[in-house]
Amino acid sequence: MRVISALLIVIGTSLPAIAADGYNIVIPGRAGVPVIINGIDASYAVVEGDWGLKRGVHVQPTVYGGRYVDPLPNVGHYYPSAGRQPGYGRLEVEPPKNRKLPKPAESFHEHWSAASPPPVQQDAIPFNPPAVIVAPDNRRR
Image (cartoon, rainbow, N blue to C red; front, side, top):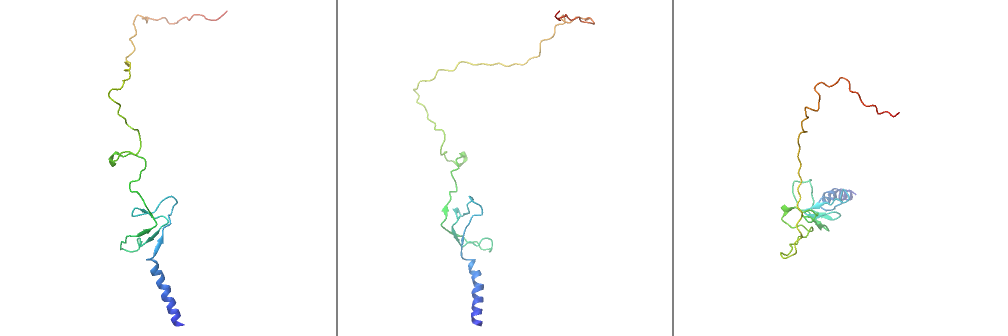
């Protein structure tokens, strides 16, 4: 009986130690967000040799069943600093030199300016205006 219980204790304590070196199945924490390991999408794949932050030794994990992720994805934007031509856009075609030219556009010119109002003539204002100004009577009778 003691041998069986000792054997069960040895098996029970060694299995958790072995489980750390086994394989892991990667389940993303959020839908639509991939888990990238060394340029490979490891979502729902088997990863072997991933010790994480548990030990101070860095081991390259092996991913079984993942798919390669392009490091320069085609996102549909054109960045001239990348040194590549855009994937789509306006097709520039140089016209032939002997083509019929369109008629020239008519000339067009606009002018804007700003100035002060003209000065008031001194003759229009009487020097001594009357005290009461009589307005005309426009009532209908």
